[in-house]
Length: 320
Image (tube, rainbow, N blue to C red; front, top):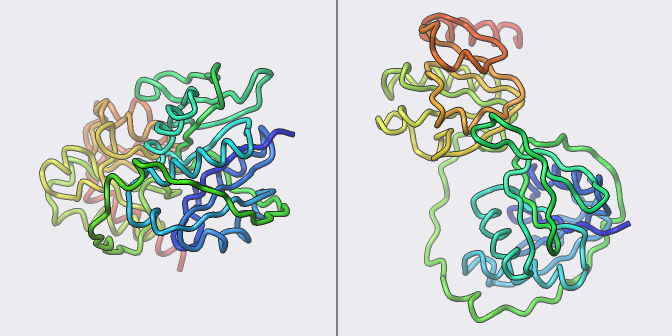
């Protein structure tokens, strides 16, 4: 069976969930070979092996931390040349898509971004995407070179499938461009204790109807009762009510959780483009004619300041 390279997104050896999802998808089209780079690369092996990696190609060097994405592209190119894989899978983060695009250009291959599913085909892997704000579902296949595919978080369930996970050193020679852009400082993001927005299984978002930054505590309360991430529409972000890092939409982040709750959001096409692939969508809006109700699974016509607190209390009481 052909090998499939999976780029490992990890923090000092702690593997992030989207990588484990990629291993599930990789097993559909071949044998997963993980590529782990940077500090703690070798310590990712146990988690990767538990989820199906037959081999872990590891390499650590200061360049991965000191410079931007080019050293990682160099390493992935070296892995492609060493393995000759059937495909290369990368998480669809902002960094992941840049790495994938640069790699595809380097190796002369086609690229598919933001896939939401992956299956084996007679002539290579077939990727499913949601197009035009999820109005259409497309299936596509790379016709030239080694397919490079980025996959959105929450596109597949994480499944345990123990494999060897043998660690092998990856030989990497950095290009002259690798040290072109240096990281001069880092500021740790302040933790809220909530899941990362694009990886969360549940997202609760607020929009113009929240009517002020001080009122987002209502949205946060519901999110915390569900163990969810907090999102915001562009209108709420532009008004300064919530940080841009939490914006869901075409010019913000694209999410695909199991459950998406939209509170006080009208459902403009810009917002729908970022959340329409959610598995179950619930909307709370006092305007019965709001466009958001055209795509929801469940809709509540009512004042969010009455509905959301009641929902939060009900969830807490059931948990308690």
